[in-house]
Amino acid sequence: DTGVTQSPTHLIKTRGQQVTLRCSPISGHKSVSWYQQVLGQGPQFIFQYYEKEERGRGNFPDRFSARQFPNYSSELNVNALLLGDSALYLCASSFGGSPSGANVLTFGAGSRLTVL
Amino acid sequence: QQQVKQSPQSLIVQKGGISIINCAYENTAFDYFPWYQQFPGKGPALLIAIRPDVSEKKEGRFTISFNKSAKQFSLHIMDSQPGDSATYFCAAKQTSGSRLTFGEGTQLTVNP
Image 1 (cartoon, helix red, strand yellow):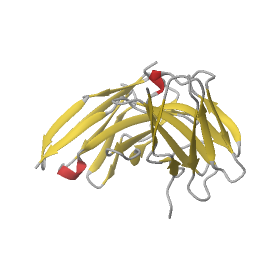
Image 2 (tube, chains in turn brown, blue; image 1 turned 180 degrees about the horizontal axis):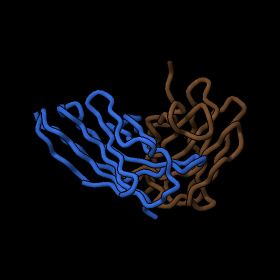
Image 3 (cartoon, chains in turn cyan, blue; image 1 turned 90 degrees about the horizontal axis):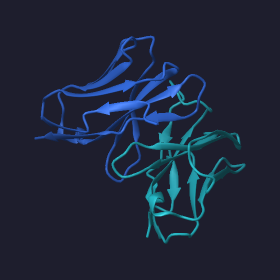
């Protein structure tokens, strides 16, 4: 059983550039969420998509955007990168839209973004 | 806005000892409280979770204690092992919501 897969695993960008991160959920899962984890802190919610529709948005600027495709995979885009965007970006999937109980939220290993 | 406060920031325990990590929350709309374990280079993995209608849940060596009136919950790791050395995060979710709000994490080191 393949878990949540994310790509790329590591990437380095410079300020002002744009980045696209990709996520493939566990087979059968219809919900994908994105979290940002700054070094030494807990993950912060960015977006959730369920059945290709945005279900939730965290307190992040409009430079952050995402989408979910018909096969339930997802992309996170960040424009005009800032030094403070350096973080581990985690994708998580679940079968249903509200993670709880049997509807476990499963995380991928993340994409580590460094902005110079 | 920090809605889930976690302590301690770091914890060192001897093998066989009990590790205790505490969390406190403010939002009474939270109705699901999971604990995640994260190893270096990996994403967080669900360890154990509880709903506020029970005061304790045990799975193997891991126990969650929940105090609804105090708005606090804690993770107890019995017979701690070096393999338990990791970062632990408590989290909370609102009723019908989709996002998890995480604490800041506790780095646990279990010495052999």
